[in-house]
Length: 338
Ligand code: UD1
Image (cartoon, rainbow, N blue to C red; front, side):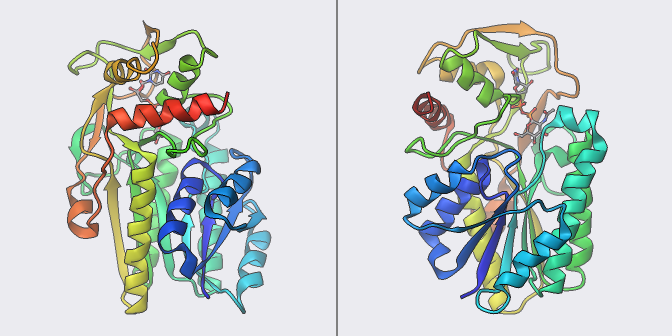
């Protein structure tokens, strides 16, 4: 049996993707999790086990450590060779990346380079990469041919890795980059969701207000050129995002079995934009969310929304869950963690 290596598999998106994968194609492959626990908790492994009914192999390894990473590939080489990689592991706090670009390039770029070196050495030629909408300039209905214009070192690391992948793909193999817009929400049972140490993004912040840990939300600016002056984003339910990974992996498997070379990149968003106030209003149907308008956040943009058409046409994937469900699942998750 071949293996699928999932880096960052105990993180928010990685863990939920594993449970979705397992439901569909996971049983035909051995799933191996790699995580350095920097932004995740070891208990997530037990949660995954309780959902899928099986204990998966976990390697607590930092992708910056080439030797330890290489040992993982070596360990499975004989019986369960790693033939597919889904690469989630990355640092993703924009503010921190501005403060410490070296840390971000070191972790994200060098770490991915190590992973791709191992993949080359152990003849694994199927690679699915977590990219981000942050590679683009702001805009409405942004398609995949929009030029790269990252506005912070975090976004730059995603662009550099996408360039590396594009160059590698010219030598053969199968490579996909998924550019996520704003993933939110949690699993229906409230077991898996995002638990950042310190909330920076909108939903984790609202969740803390929803359960009374924070008094109010600070809305960053209300004079953007949008319908109510607050920033508009393309929020996507994390379960839709997880399903996108399943579809993308199936595409890699299909091409691998035919021994075809393949390289592509896709937006993973809904194509619909909501403002901060739209979100507050929707969430307030569940629980009142007090807010106050404050100054704009440095580096924020008015609007960033996906054109999801290419993903629909070429991968047959489309987001199914709307804003009401995103808010309900987010609230359900955070309540169950109290
Ligand atoms: C941020 C990152 C982006 C990353 C994404 C991951 C920045 C500038 N960009 O996107 O690179 O890929 O997270 O999900 O950080 N807001 C408030 N109050 C808050 C928090 C947010 O008003 O306490 C507003 C923001 O101004 C923005 C919207 O909510 O209009 C969404 O913000 P956020 O959830 O941080 O995501 P992005 O900034 O879009």
